[in-house]
Each structure stands twice: as C-alpha cells, then as structure tokens.
Length: 125
Length: 361
Image (cartoon, rainbow over all chains, first blue to last red; front, side, top):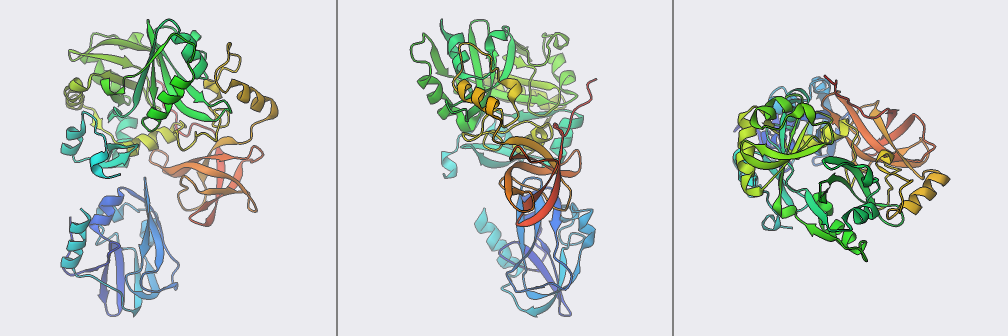
C-alpha cells in the first residue's frame, strides 16, 4: 500500500498536496484498493466553494459508492475532467493522473502526515 | 455479527491464498473479488470463470409424497420435469409474496431444491409448516454439499476432458451424476451468469481438489461482485432485491416459472390468480441511465412529480459500459422516467430484458 511521504492525508482517505496556496486532492491508494474498479466520478462545478470536511463529490466503483470530503476549505479552481472518460485512472495512478480536483485554500483542514495516516490504516485492519 | 460468527465454505483457505477480498454475505465469509470485478466479469463473458457458491442451501424432499409436497410448495408444475431435469421456480406465501426463488432438481427417487443462503432457515421452516398430512421427509442437506459454478464460453472445453460424461447430450437445465477428475459429483448445466456452463455439486471434502483442478485447467476465480453484475446483465432476479415477501413472482417478471393452471394448487396460487385477473400492482422493468451517474438498489423512481417505483438493482454494466438497472414500478409507467441518484434527478429509459444475451454457437 503506497503512502507517499510528501503528501498529507485525511481520516476519510483523501490525499492533498498544497503548493502555492492551491490544494490538489485525490483518494489514497488504500481507498482505491478498497473500492475496486472505479467506474464513475461525480465532480463538483468549477467555482464551487467547500468548507473543510464538506462532501464535494463521490467515487463509484462497480459495487459501491464512496463520498469525497474536502481536506481543506476553498474554491474549486480546476477539476480533473479526464476522469469523466477514464475513471480507472483513480485505480491505476491514484496520486498522479487520478487526481480529482484543485482548491484555492481559504481554510486549513485537519490533516495527517504520512506516518499518522499509516497509523489510521493499521487501526482499520 | 463479528467475524468469528461467520460461516466458511470448504474453499475458504483457497480464497484467502488467492488474495480474495472476503466479506460477510448472508452470514458467510465469502470472496467478493479476486483480480477485480471488471476483469472477473470479462473472464466469464469471454473465457471461463469459477465461483464458489457453496453457501447455497440444498434441501431434499424424499418419501412417497415428495412430489405432492414439492407441488404444494413451488410455483412450477414439477410433474412436467423428467428425472434429470431442473426447473426454476418461486416459493410463495399464501398472499402471493415471495419466500424464495429456487431451482428444483427432479432426481429418480427424490427432489433436491437449491435455495438462497440468506433464506435457508426460513425456507426449511416454511417447507416443514406446509407439508402437514404428507408422508415426506424434508431434509436440510446443505452441509453435505459444496457447490462450484463453472461459467463461460470455455466451460465445456475445460470440463469435458475431466469426465466421461458427454456434454453434447446434456442440454440446458439438465443434470447428471458422474465423476470429474475421479471425484463423485452432480453436474448441472445451469448458471446465474447468462453464459453456458455448469454448476457442480460435490462433497465438501473433495471441493478443494476440484477447485484447484479447474483453475489449473484454465478457469479464473470469480467472486460474488462479478456474480452480481453478470446476473444483472442477464436480467436475472436476486432475492432481497427484485423478490421479497412484498413482491409476487408475477410482479418480478418471472411468470415463466409460475404455472397458474396447476392442480392441486400451490401455496399462494389463489392470490396470484386474483392478481392476474385484477392486474399487476407493480412490474419489473429494465432501464438504462441516460444522464450521468449509477442507479443503485433503493433509489427512488419518479415520473417527475411523484414517486412511481424503486430501483431494485443497479450497476455499471462492464459489458455494455453503461449504467443499467432493474426497477419495480407502477404498471402505468412507460418508457421514460427519472431516477433519484443520490438525491439528483437523472433521466432513464426502459430497455428490453435481458441487457445481455450471449451468442449461441
């Protein structure tokens, strides 16, 4: 299970990379593994605004649906529209091409370091 | 329920070793997927998949009145079955609601009824309560059997070299006793995927050996996740989704398994005759989602203004690449409606069932 050191995480299995005030958000390798084959991603509109912890969309696999939660608060500046036709990118490359959206950060969230997230995973097993 | 309460089939260690994800299904710790639902689904549609369905129940009716008892309990006229023939049927309550959907196997001297794992105890109670006055033994022999399903276009090619039974003479919904790889089995040309294939009843102590042999021969292990997407594409009902105590077999679209002219009558026949005369209260339809999203079990169906039904099953169809589903709707509902997918209205259109039909070669 891959948990890159340079990212931050949520207890709800999103990852976030904050650069120049913009947070790129996706779901973790663990989350995609649990979901199985992702077949649909419900993305928010650009310009939508979320508070940290708000549900901003959903990822659906063949068998289940999982809500997505904003790791930080902010306005959506970009969504990964490539996922509309290739949702499997979330399985294949969760930390790369499977990114989901970018938020302009206006509110800090309750984020975990990679080592703290690994502890969360260990407790779930 | 904690994990320690879950029952395990004789193939549990095989599943664990194969890296399956195991889940609680009807009180059983069962494999939901191995390689992934889409890959397993495709294996069954294009090659051959192997399923452990040992959690299914087997109830045997034997004795002088066995046929009379089965006739009283199931919707199909089993007097029309020949020994060696199986038939799909429903079991109903007096009010026509469905207790279970089952396969009835007519053997030379008795009847074997395969029931859903989730309904096993309820069925045995229902059976026992409705055979009073008859000279019949109703025996729950579920623990005496493991059940493997080998399904897909390559199923015959995989199984034929392992047995003396000639499958060119074994038609769909026929079964025969024999040996596979030297192990005693009952081989049934049935399945729940829309593909050609077999269900193989075997003693639990022999199941691991057969499982490994079939995998070595080219079958790929398939879990309950793909079993559900396969049966849904094939337009087949799942008890608890399309069928339940509040839904009759006529409403769920399995009238082909109901013989309303049967004499003497089966439990629920009067209610079903009345419903047929008065008109169905609801009907099962297949649909495709036209907008974005995937309809799921329990989502509401509306005509834009009013609730007119409920989605009973829904998924993303791996074969068709579209979101498909089944819904129980009011009989007046026509070819277009709205599904409330996670509280958002999404248009859907009805389509003929099944969604997928194999090419018969």
